[in-house]
Image 1 (tube, rainbow, N blue to C red):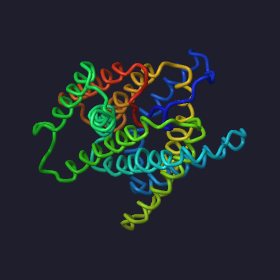
Image 2 (image 1 turned 180 degrees about the vertical axis):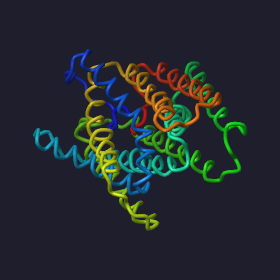
Image 3 (image 1 turned 120 degrees about the horizontal axis):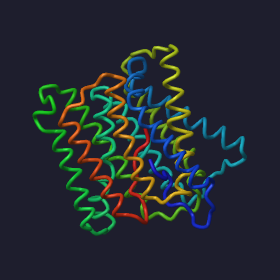
Image 4 (image 1 turned 60 degrees about the horizontal axis):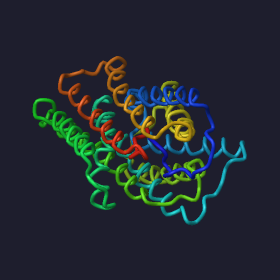
Length: 315
């Protein structure tokens, strides 16, 4: 995920040197990449929607406590609250709920790849609702990304007789569309608060949405509290949600936006390969081809927008 609160105000100095920022960027890519198989493992003990709600709640609590301790906790201005609500509800709350739901039915590597199609969906959304032009590079990126999806959804690579698998794939595409919708909504908003001011409140709204979904969709399955489930929940909430968001905000201040966007493509690639190594998932030719096409498409879209990012995903 890139800056979840929108464009950062001009004139602020980077919190880190470029060398430190590159180190942080590498750490974030690793943390989010390995989290895909970790989330898949966590679903063995944690019901999907409760996993999501607890993760977001822990992430929000971590940031609130940390920012308060550092005396950096701020209440955003009223001007920004509508967009904070949009980001918290659609771009984080619904996105994360759909990711955890869909991950029940889809291998972690494939899920990571589908979730990272977000920038591809931003292109037609920006054309329809923001009046942006379809440049040659964006057109090539969109074509490559859609070709990658076609490869993933061809009859030879997907078991169309298994309704759960098909449903899971569609749910994850819906998650990517939610994130893309949030990006299009906030793309023209002029933020008066900083990203760090907005994020804890966005996570709080997302956690509230997650709790409501968990209560409404509760199927009676109990949480299996054990050392592994607790460690995975702590990893997801404190590290893969709260602290990595903080790190990405710092990275965005120190590095070019396109650099961050392109580097984040290591997340789905890492998620796919680590899922093969950790979970023993199959690495088929169609999955590899889909990976190359989708990552290539997203990279092309990101490169075509050097002055700003279209956004990536948080896992």
